Picture 1 (cartoon, helix red, strand yellow):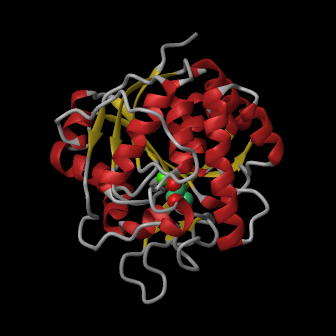
Picture 2: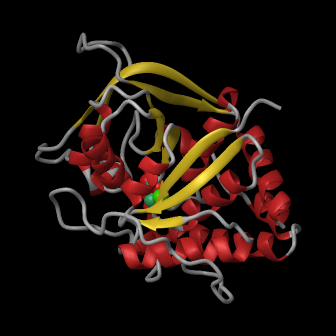
Amino acid sequence: MPTPTPVVLDCDPGHDDAIAILLAAGSPEIDLRAITTVAANQTLDKVTLNARRICSAAGIPVPIARGCAQPLVRPLYVAEDIHGASGMDGPSFGSISVDVVEDHAIDVMHANMPCTLVATGALTNVAMYLQRYGTTAVREIVLMGGSTERGNTTPYAEFNIYVDPEAAAIVFASGVPVTMIGLNVTHRALVTPAVVARLNALGPLGRTCGELMTFFAATYREVFGFDAPPLHDPVAVARVIDPSLVTCVEAFVGIETTGTFTRGATVVDLQGRLGRTPNARVAVDLDVDGFFDLVIDAVARLT
Ligand code: BDR
Ligand code: CA
């Protein structure tokens, strides 16, 4: 087995972020150094509590550090319609056995460099890190956000980019190798009843995942009319575990920060029409079965 990839997972749990944490912690290909939290799906207090909840339920001992409570320049916009009032509605969690460390998320990132940053929330912490500590120690940024197609928060903006487009612009312009896992791919990772049944068969932790996915399915049905909810964030983790599962192409990605109707849009120049040097690897395809096998195996290892 090759040396595990050192990773700091920056997230806003969030139903799919919770599964991303389990996938990272339960996969031997990843050395999960720390979990950092950022306000987006819900307030910083709520998403940090949720990170502690899922880590306690799964016995994950990695440090958890709080990051930014607000986007760089805008008021916070949360996804209560998708993730509920707690940010991770559905299961009732037991007692919490893991605390947060005192250091700020960006200092914890710094302490764990060199590593890969996997970002599954707004990019506020990552942009703050790059501005404070520079780019050289970051091996790669693999982020769930954006789309080559349409958005899910406005017609052209995906939620994570919409919440903090100025941070996203900093990340994409940073020169660090960036891999963008957008809705065009994550909308193929649908948690069907068959996937929920596989999770439920794994014991208490699997049933907690099943309950998370049942709540997520209900909001995705109500808000978007989806038959099954997309497991966005774990696809970014899967790309680190096994890059062959997520096909990517190099492209220039511009972030719309001032559009009248398009703020937060990722303008992905797949045909090179803008004549700009590519600044990202952009996911365009996913081995769906291979992806869900990784998720199930990881949860099984933690059970
Ligand atoms: C992204 O938005 C959040 O609600 C999810 O956790 C995911 O990171 C999908 O657009
Ligand atoms: Ca997320």
